[in-house]
Amino acid sequence: MVRIGGRVSVGLMILVIPAGCHQPGSSSNFIDRQIIGEVLMHSEFSANLRELCVPGGRLSGSPNGHQAERYVADRLVAYGLESVHLEPFEMVTWRDRETKVTVLGQPPHVVEGALSLGNCLSTPEEGITAELLDAGQGSAEELAAVGETLRGKFALVREGGLHRGEKMALAVEYGVAGLLQVSKLEDRARVGQCHPEPRPQPGIAIPGAEGARLAERLASGEQIRINVRVLADAWEAEPNNVVGEIPGSGRLAEEVVILAAHLDSWHLAEGALDNGSGAATILEAARALAAVDWQPRRTVRLIWFMGEEHGLHGSRAYVRAHGDELDNIVAVVNVDMPGSPRRLSTFGHEEVMDFLRAVNADLRGFEISDEIGNASWTASDHAPFMKEGVCAISLGGDCGPGVKYYHSHGDTYEQVDRRGTVQSAAALAMLVRRLADIPQRPTERLDPVALAEKMGWDRD
Image 1 (cartoon, rainbow, N blue to C red):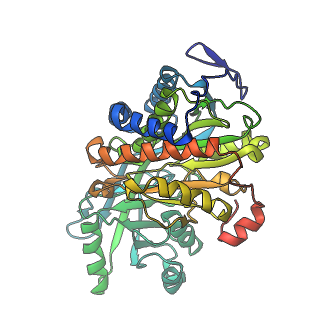
Image 2 (cartoon, one colour):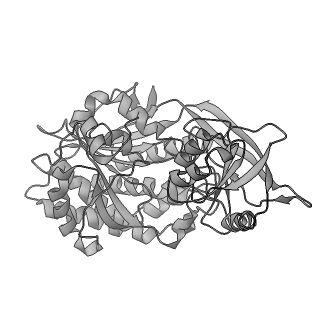
Image 3 (cartoon, rainbow, N blue to C red):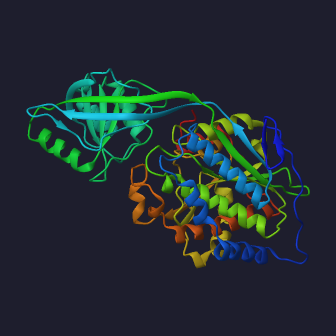
């Protein structure tokens, strides 16, 4: 049982208390202007982002993570949302404490700035020593080209192309000792999930300059042996998804529009871009929607997911726990590193295109692209919903020059385009308002198997 702001949540039971009422005679455009004006004139985005950006990030199940959960819940209560509660779930959390890569020789060279990728278990105390081979970008074709010669060796790959987890999975099939991924950043490494659960093969991220030197030596025909040592922790944790609502009224109240973002981050820097910016954006949208005393037809549910960085654990847990509600979910609007607004996209749901085009037309002042995207990426918290046939929508943006520092020691509050991201908060609040109030439901739940075949998704 979790008590927040005088309310009590037991398990998944939600107490819904009716909120304000319609303003007599107000048109939908008038409400949109109120909402956008509230964001642009009275934004608390930067203040909330600053509170969420603490040294060491917001690792799921960590003290910082729980502090962030509590902060968001308290702000929702202060903003007047209903049914504010925490939904706990179990997962394995991981972090590295020490990562060392040494290029053997006379003298040996320690690779500066090496970081373990997510879910790599500790190596033996003496580390793992093996030859290093260049596998290019780490594509399926490039890994197949070196094939069995990788057995017992480390593969050097570049960041980009396939997800790092896919590269590792392919490399493990060839029996690699481990993987070194060269960052696009010259001076620092970028981390991220490497294995779906803790596994022994080390995946290591190294700065671009260090990787380029290794690649040049290998290209000259030199044989290179490296020693990799990782000291990491993996433990059972119980983070919480944070949930709050603006309840609907009337015959459409049981239908739900979800606005979501992940709250967790890696344990480097402050987790500001990824995804403190998204978490603060939907908090600002929640504040504005509540501030104008708007009574939606459909229920608007705000969710801050934990466990995204380690494999979408929070959103997966939510979909499992709320499986009987999926037919009632009109759309899930997921916000991951929003930046300034640039393009609306959906994921295989052509039936919502006309609705999104109408929203686009009324947001032309934000210079959003006229083209509605039909996206297929599956690496954020919309994926568990869309793989069950629920309509997912995203608002892609321009995060500015600081975006290169996501998943790195440079991901700090100062790197976020705060003025631009406030525009996304305004646009998203209006989008959610339209989804909640349109009389005719603009989406339908599609057959998950047929949708996966159409979009080329793996449904696991």
